[in-house]
Image (cartoon, rainbow, N blue to C red; front, side):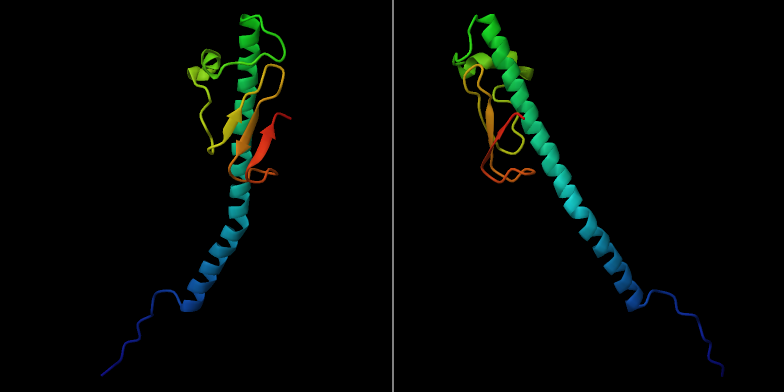
Length: 125
């Protein structure tokens, strides 16, 4: 009677542990970059919304012959906004304060965005 030695196929536990370790290392390097990129893009979207609000206020003031310091009713900005929406589409649940004509609009963010901590006020640079 002869015993046949068949080669065993498969991976050893050590090989599997090495692969899992490499994947974990790559994830540890990549995830903070993804989080930072997401925060930066959200902050850029909020700043873009502030620019749109400022443009709408200026357009409203020109068409209604109002000067610096004039208060714009919230309902009057809609026609000057993209898609007629005021406030603009919210990115992260922020709140916008438009302020009078000539005074920069602000946004309060509920979460950390870039260098802004949670509940910080974002203004145009």
